[in-house]
Image (cartoon, rainbow, N blue to C red; front, side, top):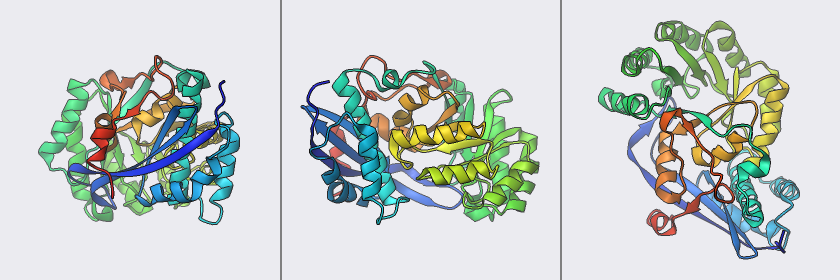
Length: 367
């Protein structure tokens, strides 16, 4: 490996409007901010990103860049540990954790590009095709929009698993939730799998009651029926409903995942590499899950997760989240095709295989 001293670290935020207002059980939004980090050594650039407030970009430039500049790019584990120490007083969850995650992804991408190998091959591939599910079905959608999105995924693209949002208005509209679940089942037919995500909108007993009624529609994945902080509530719902109960997307450190798994709170652990410490955090969390005999599912940022998912033995699938896939396909060269319900990690280009289209991104840049 050539001399690989890191000589530049940059970060920028891009705010991309949604196609239409989007919402879930407990939040609504009309734009998504992506923070992109680049790390350069020996004339080669590695790229990472997270979906976070624009302040994460300033945190990278003002707090993390100095840890990396002048260091060797090949020692990613040591650099990751140094970043974790640097954010001690800032607090690992939230902005600091998201910033560390984007930097870690950029470091791994840089190392793979310096060596000249795809990331999935650097880590060792467990599979050459990664299962995925279509994710959207926002509570702000009317019936026609929901039908069109689900029909495109299932009947046009051949994606056999789809997810919609429920728990509308913090669980105060269960009748509309159930109406939309039934609509989704009618749209996708009997053979496709139907998932739902309440984003913590229900109380535990309310979630049990809703789950009983959703059983008529063969819902097999019930994501965050209650707040992910309510481990006892998650376990109660898990024990009383047939659908797999899942959570974990807000995890920023190993302690979070360890507590969730040890509590018996989930049937499948969700992990988000853009929040939990990048690829380094991803593989550590997958080991925690494996130690509790659990599969894992990648939360959002589908193209970022693809190479890590391909290298993960206990993977169930990745979330092909509509909002993030739309952004990644527009702003990066190399975005994957989800047709057939599987995606292939890049094996013919170094790193994760994605390159930012700077001209396309510039129009969304946050001043």
